[in-house]
Image (cartoon, rainbow, N blue to C red; front, side):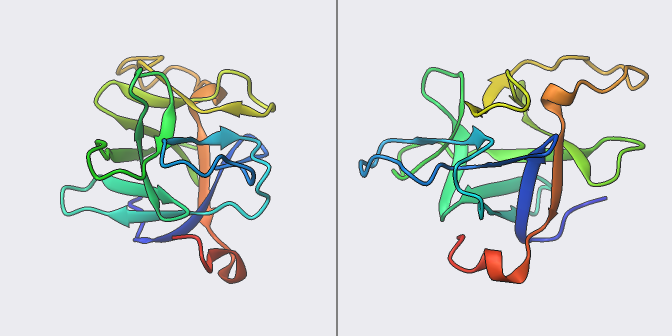
Length: 151
């Protein structure tokens, strides 16, 4: 099911995903974290006419770090914003894989505070494979009071 444009929370297992509360004040890209310290973290997910999505955290669009290892939020117009595909996982309610080309969102240490990495696909096109929780994200509409100031 396609997600309509709006504010959402993203979790990996039971851990909230988002930017941390305490970041440096530079315009350098900021990591997106699993088990973020910001317990009110929300994302603005905007559907593009192509069917892909622009995913923003605290007003900053996300993409892949310069070294190609991490999902980050960008502040410079010169940085490449990625339009992500958000694919529902069959049989798991509100659960998705987030990817663009060969960059899948990936949690290297589920249940722990760690930056979200990007990884090649773990299963290729094999729909019969049991889903790997390191690549799965629960996306749900954000509570109204959490959406304020998120963009």
